[in-house]
Image (cartoon, rainbow, N blue to C red; front, side):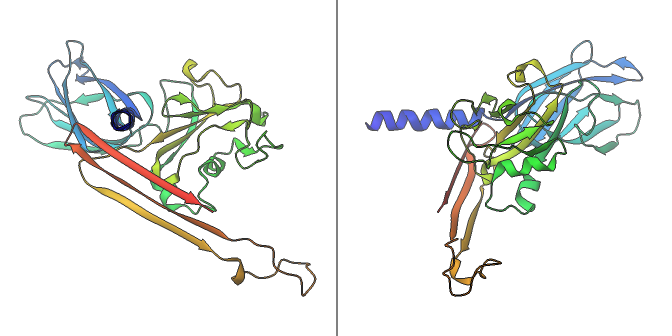
Length: 295
């Protein structure tokens, strides 16, 4: 039994480390000509990765965690250039155009990488971890953040589980045609609930993406739209949070149009939980755990 528990824990850590990985690639040029041997460094989300451009100026780094990163490109005789971007799930592209100089200086560019995509016809909107943390949320229900997209509305009808809170319609299609993905895997219960099969705590989500049309073939299981969730991973620094919410029914006013003297309808709600992430081996292996309960 101990061996099975240890094996399960090791497998869980491996799975957590593999979640939310991004492939980042691009091309380095100087005065319109491909630049070979340029040093490309990606810093952020608890790790640093280095790659060099090839003969055609292209470079590629796989297995990056989603989140905020800084990409710096340097080459002898050129002005170093630095870009701060936000990595999302899937393959992403970022090009650099350097200029020649005899004086060493750095150009810092801050840009939103996915504000407008010119390399794909995808229509999507991303809800970042900052938005999930700072925007108000009744009941901390993750799928309610999908309403930040103008393409999403509440679906009409109950699933087999009798709960309509996760019935979301995209582009006025039936909620049955809305698909759900979790860390790159299909998370759609199309038989029982017509909604996400596994729910994730808001505190464990790094990015929440709403794709409403023209997405890649890898998301082709849906005819309306796809809601993808990327979970958090640990970093080199220890970080976490504790949450608590208490709503006793005794302090609430009586509902409108209710005859006086009738007892209040019970409406208590208690939520509690927390998360913790950190390094197991710096720059290589991390852990992230999360728990949330509700009654």
